[in-house]
Length: 87
Image (cartoon, rainbow, N blue to C red; front, side):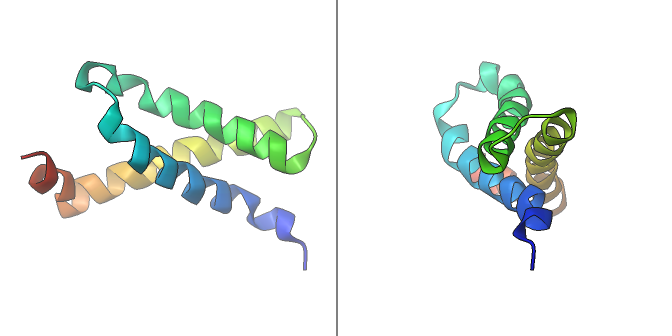
């Protein structure tokens, strides 16, 4: 079993969890940069996990980081969870 085929979803989940912890610490006017940070974090984690760098690794990391942003928005828009938390 090759675990490398599961690295992008694992990085997406990790970036999403890190974003959940960091998001309350970011000022509301700077939250527009969170997707950029998620993308960069995904690229960094995928490069670290692969111990190599190529265009495919860059795209996989970018997709996993931006996928974490998509997961966040999916939960936000379908459940209304953030509306209850933020008041």
